[in-house]
Image (cartoon, rainbow, N blue to C red; front, side, top):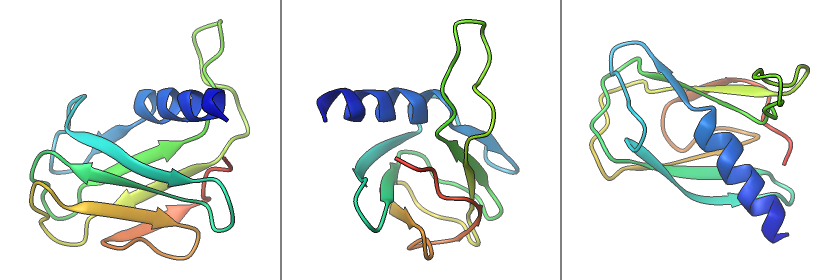
Length: 109
């Protein structure tokens, strides 16, 4: 289980991308929890303010030694619907996020 937690953290940390109005950098959010039992969910805390329409993609794509992501994995895209302040915790699960909206498939832990 410990290896699974480490792998999850590394993959998700390495695969956070930001687009839209707020430009996020490494360290601008931190994962606060994840659950791999039914229902699958994870949460993160924003360490920077984000503008409305900020988009962050999360994936469970594995990183290959060839320098590319493994194919045929899930991606879920979170969008802020309004401006959100630093310190806000966002929880994403298979039904709906606590704040904002999501599209795509929940990564399979």
